[in-house]
Length: 600
Image (cartoon, rainbow, N blue to C red; front, side, top):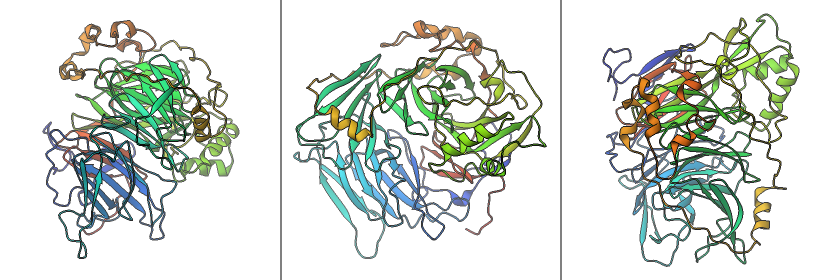
């Protein structure tokens, strides 16, 4: 698949790269794909996606991997940097006829060695709840069983399995009752064993409960809340049924959403180019941001919930402050659309103005060193304790990554000279440590916000690090639901009927408007690009969408071509980085010092 790194050819596939932490190396024997290892002809297929879960079994090898390729879905034991991948023995393999899987998500709360709940979204709008360990299909959502359309699922098709081949046939309709459009994103609601959220290319999102049915008739909706470019409806029926809530967000497809680390806020990116951040419980809009041009395709939260990074059709990564509700930086390194952005919760730089002294307790220091090893709910209290007891300035430099259709992997550092450009510089000692990924964002009242110290690491090379005026917070959102989401939804179900028409799809962004085809000197000419639903000229130069010269422009630490096909997956694990391309190859990149020698 690839040649050794360090070649001189521009189109050479790299198998290793170096950062300040050391050497990252692709592990050829840890590559996952279809069993025949033949590149998948991805033309017209949905993006390859990857999901992980840890079953916490006694063997010490509890990591499981799920990925989709075309109409196929695979479930493997993931051996990572420890052992070679065995593609001949998938735990579960399913081939779908009549629809294709588009996305999936494990429920980490309920996962055991004997059972795991996996949600799978499909191109025809369905959502399936399956257990790949028991090889069972629990439920189908957004389906109508009275029509004679065959959706056939074959388990273990194409390989022998102890004497028999299992298959399942389900009767589902082409004409969905809830939403006919492709599922773009599906995720379990953080902290819930039964609630999950589904986004569609129609621009709608739906909240489901696995314990409830979808009914045999089309749902009727009651308007719950409406704001600028969004509306939320409840489902009105005599008995509780799915969907519990319907969100209509923006114009065109809703491409991705992400919950904040504490699960209280929801960030959504749409084809209309807008990032919208909601308080999930109170369904209040917290803040918005507009892309430089084109649709936004991906979104992620920083480990502490203070920053959101987006990527999209402007070839840029954009960093947005949750606290200040403003763009604080853009990054330009990709030559085509950015398909995935993700923070690395295990790599950070801690700057200390006095390297010989640590003013916190020994327990605080150990918490800092092992910040990424315990991803439990106690993280919030640990962070609060560290912030309150450490009187000397200690700050975090954020590491995040991006992959795109240009087949390139970029790594970025978000440093204090970008986050706090007006702070005075001071000498700092940099340590590479481990940080945790689940600290909560600032609350709606802003009281829980802690500001990093003044220490600044050596600045990264960048072409624009201009100071910018602070933009006031968009205002506090104090209207929060009482009790859990499920109880709140049950109260809304009694409201009267009001059905809202679905918005039309926005036309796809033209490919030749990519940032890679326009010189930096002519960036202001992008103002002339108009959209059917949104006038970009009205937002450019405002806090929603600052001009390129008004915010710092980041350059990537590394930018390497790592695949033949466009990249669709970027996941940071404790001992490795995982990438995947549209050809169906899932690659493992061992972190410095984490690679274990083994025989394939």
